[in-house]
Amino acid sequence: TMLSIVVCLLRTLILRLGVAFQLLNKTLLTN
Image (cartoon, rainbow, N blue to C red; front, side):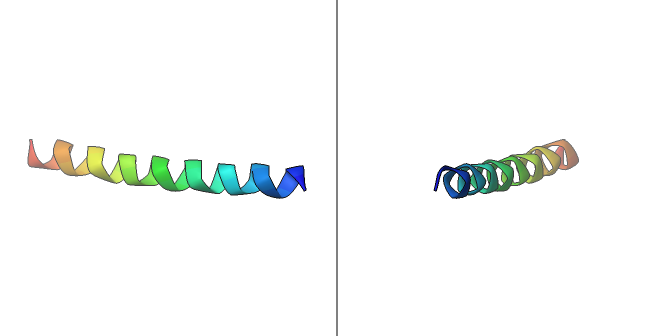
């Protein structure tokens, strides 16, 4: 259904945001 597709997209977006946030934290810590 449409709802399941939206949920999958939201999950992938949250995962990508989490990875980007971790990368930002690493760069900030190294600097």
